[in-house]
Amino acid sequence: MQKIVIVGGGAGGLELASRLSRKLGSKNKADITLVDRSRTHVWKPLLHEVAAGVIDKHSDGVDYAIHAASHNYRFQLGEMCSIDAAAKTLTLSPLIDEEGHEVLPKRQVEYDQLVMAIGSVSNDFGTPGVAKHCYLLDSLAQAERFHRALLNQLIRINQQEVSNLDKNAHINVAIVGAGATGTELAAQLHHVANLSKAYGMPDMSASRLKITIVEAGERILPALPTRIANTAREALNDLGVVIKEQTTVAEADCDGLITKDGSRIDADLMVWAAGVKAPDFVTSMGLFETNKANQILVDEQLRSTTEKTIWVLGDCCGFQQDNGKWVPPRAQSAHQMADIVAHNICAVVNGKTTKPFVYQDYGSLVHLSKYSTVGSLMGSLSNGSMFIEGRLAKLVYVSLYNMHQFAVHGKVKGVLKLLVKKLSHAMSPKLKLH
Image (tube, rainbow, N blue to C red):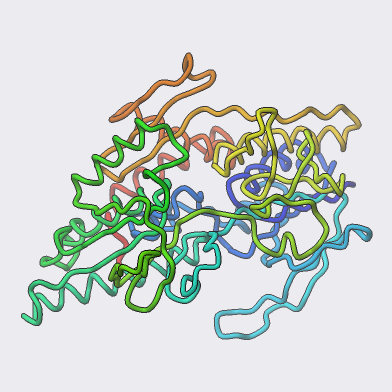
């Protein structure tokens, strides 16, 4: 029986585990193991909503262990630290609890087919002070850490008003990077500031929140069409968000950001969302060919160019298209890659022919909380590129999450999960306060 190990339970990794469990695990053709350092999966495009506190991991997340138990695969809690390709084993670091105690020692996991789905991390480009003073939104734990800090700031401002300490006090938030994460987070924070009025903070409102987005490029959403960027910019301007384009951050300290021209941006909370790369240990292992973003280079079947029993998908995958462009690190890319890797691993196990990966760009969407959703549809969804906004754009945005749910749970259980989620959201508070 083939041993298939998937490292990383993000959008692509969890979808792949679900597909392989249905096609191979349920038929006793393969022993499938998913490895992740977190106990819970939350779709990465929603992490900024976890950070803002408008969704809860308990109602919107997937418990890996429970999912594995009902889907014919195993779950190993841990973080990979090395791979021995010759012996076909990977090593997991010791598992340490929150109090610093060792729960499990180093462990080795054997494989016949290994899938690297380790995602990406924020790229601070070596900017001094970022690692110490800025919040990142690469993982569920980081999103929850920012949420706790945000709650403390909301409580501080509300209490100052109640105690008549400073009626003009406000929260300064600086977001570095005007991609989808940065712009969507800004809109969600504005919404949360107003929403907090109904949850024990009557003196808090969006007027007490000063949000600044810092972008090194010429415009926000540089990877998306200009019309989408302009529409999103207008929506953010209407919310009072300050946008500083063509501004490079040179340093971060405990009081804010210092730009390349020497000016200062004061901030109580700083979020770094400027660019992504595959984790640094990918290059330090010396096992793979990589590009400038640390992504693992792959062949047409999404196998590593150096190890044919190691497959790669998602943000850590470096796939260069015929036009010279790299496949972008997006959820739709991971979804498409999971499809092909599932097909190809099944083909290897069953002695059939693999097929090449061809990326199809279906467009992009930006969801600015309750205020606006804008995007474009491409490929088979439209003839050329079609700009959409408003309710239609929101419907398409929601459908992307639904597609992920169906891929992870199957259509029947996926529909039931969505119904339960809708009921839960209707009865639960709109803002998470813990």
